Amino acid sequence: MGGGGGGSISSSDMRTLEDKAKEKLSQAAADTSRHVFISFAYEDVDEVNLLRGQAKNDKTDLQFDDHSVKEAFNSNNADYIKRQIREKIDRCSVTVVYLSGNSSKSDWVNWEIEESFKRGKGVIGVYKGDSPPKSLPSAFSENKCKAVKWSHEELTKAIEAASKKR
Image (cartoon, rainbow, N blue to C red; front, top):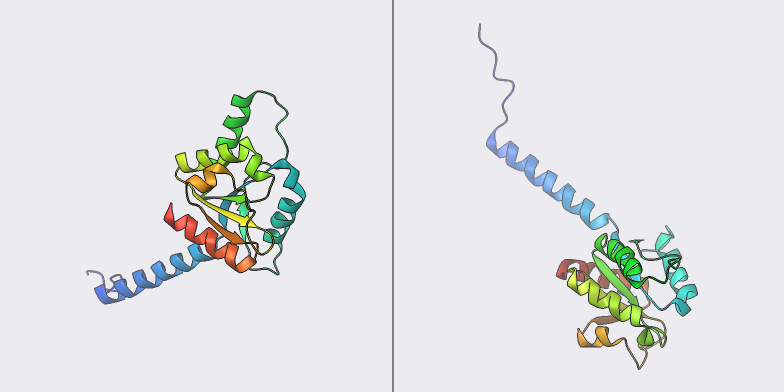
């Protein structure tokens, strides 16, 4: 009368299954895009929109989910704006700062960098051209953030590294 033994798995088979499951989960994590907040001076919105578009293009290896501000908040209340930006930063693992002559003068870019660090986020910079602008946002320089050239490969590596470092 008792049942047969068909329901048990040997410990070595169990370990093999666990190893395969861990490997699949690891691959899935590596294949998922990172959640990124892009900090930039509003004067650079056209170039930042180009960066956003490249990240959505299936034909490039640059991939991230952009949770940054797309439309200016219709408010003059700085506390309200900061609260809204904090919520967006909280959804991300990395803040990418678009470095330009405009970003170095922006109080908002400096605040977003400082807030990202306070919230435990990785921060990197990206610039167009052969070298970063001479003048960088003070919070970027003070925190010795890494800046990379706007290239899909370099930016992808930098986002991944900043995500793991935080």
